[in-house]
Every structure is written in C-alpha cells, then in structure tokens.
Image (cartoon, rainbow, N blue to C red; front, side, top):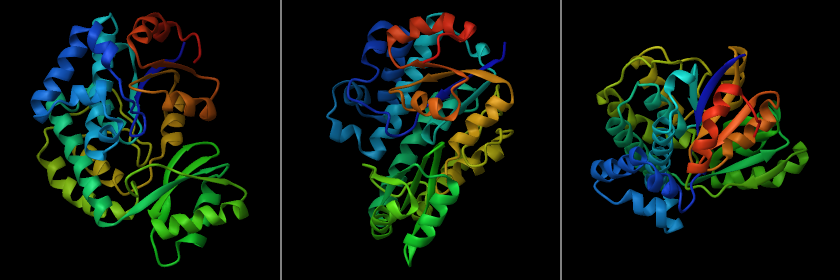
Amino acid sequence: MGQAAVIFPGQGSQAVGMGKDVAGASERARNIFLRADDVLGFDLARTCFEGPAETLEQTDIQQPAIFVTSVAIWQAFLEAGGSREQFSFAGGLSLGEYTALHVAGALEFDDALRLVHRRGRLMQEAARARPGGMVSLIGADEATATALCDRAREDDVLAPANFNCRGQVVISGSKPACDRAVRLAEEFSCRAVRLAVAGAFHSPLMATAAESLAPVLASTPLTEPSIPVVANVDAEYHRSPATIRESLRRQVTHPVLWQRCVERMVADGVDRFMEIGPGRVLTGLMRKINRDVTTINVSSMDAVCAALPEVESGSPRA
C-alpha cells in the first residue's frame, strides 16, 4: 500500500453554512470557531454559518473563513479518532497551503489565522488599487495559455495564474487584457469562463500585496513542518522557515502549480488523498489529474465519520 496525503482548498470553496454541522457535533471544532472570533475580534463563525454570501465572498473575510472552517473539520477528524500520523504529506491550493503548514506543525493556529487575515486584506487592497480579473481556459494546456496571454496582453498585464489540472488553466491580469483573452479564446481552441473574483490574484498586479506581506511573514513564528508540505510555486517541499517565508511571498504574484504539486506527491508514493475543508473543488480536480488515486472528500461531520476507515484502506474512490 502507498502513502496518504491531506490537502486543503483555497478561495472559491466557501458556501454559507460551512462548518456549522461540524461545530455543532464536535467540541474541538466548536472551539476553533470560538478561538477564531477571539483572535480576529469579530464574529467569523456567524458569517460562516449564516452569511450573508456577499460578506463571505469578500477576500479579507473569505480567506480566514475557509482557513478556520478547514481547521475545524480537521480538528473534528482528530477528535473522532484520526491522526496526523496517518498522512505522509500535506498540501493546499493557494490559501490552502497555509492550512497545510498549520496542520503540519509549522504555524500555530493564532499566528496562521492572523497571517491569512492580513493576506486577504492586502490582496483586497491591491485589487482595488489595480483592478483586474481572472479567466479560466477550458481545454487549454500551458503552451496554449501562454500563447493566448502573449497575444492578448498588449500593454497590459496578463499571465497564467493557476495550472489546476489537465485542460484547465486560469489566467489573471488587467480587465482589458482579460476581455481580449475571452474574445480570442476560440482561436486558440479553448473556452473562456470569467471567474467571479475580486482581482487579478497570482499575477504581477498583486505586487504591492506581496511586498507588504513580506514583513508580516518575517515576524510570524515558523518551524520546520513535521511532514513534507508541497509548495505551490515550484512543487518542491518546504524545508525551513526561511524557504516557507519566501515561497509564501512569491505565491501572491506567481502561478499556483497545483497539478504539479499533486503529481509530485504521487511520484513520491502517495496513492490516497483526503481533501479536508468546505466544498469539493480539489476532489473534482483530482479526477482530471489522476483517476488512479483514491480521493476522500471530508467537508461535513458525516464525512468525518466515514473517512476514518477510508484513509487507512484507500477505498472507495470519490
């Protein structure tokens, strides 16, 4: 039998009501939400449980909300009998990388929560200062996405931002360039879907956010992860606090190489993945990256209970 990895979702996985059933059934999950409210100084739990959706979709609220919900579900999993020792690797998509680092012991909860809240604010401020957008290219590979960006960019900013899976590349940049990319997509034999996001994330338009995040990362206590955590920017494993800080800074303006991250873990022996957090985004992507691995989705209390034997046996596949 191969090894197991735990993975965590990023922005876009949120939904009103997330975490409510877990907090109601698990004392450890409930305590995570209570602690988050204390650290942040506002009622994040109510926003997660009751909305409104418009508030939950704000970048500075969405990022800590997804992080806290993911950690709460993780704690419910531990309380039900799961353990970190069941996993040989960890990873996460964009924001989810912070959750993975926390679960792997590199970041304490309070520090990680303050960090992701600050990250969300900085990215939101950068988006307001330099408006932009993101477009998903369905049916595109890296070469196609790069060529389309080169054609549509002109004097604006446009670049690949997320290599999610085979046939799905997200590009990010200024609104005029995104508009041109949508119009040109058919010429490049792909379909363009505009994403409902607040800005041009993982692009050079986020440079001010990356610059402002650097001193925050420098002052945040970090330790070496207890299990390997794969980095979005290069699909290598974090080795030290210094490399974690630099990687997380670069992640704000550089593409997320999620497909490569998954392929790296598979190459290193992983055949079972457990997605912990709201939604099923990573579970869906996994079907397009590698259908031969087992993927277990844990986004509710019922799923927590069902996952305990599955992470050991590796069946059934989600």
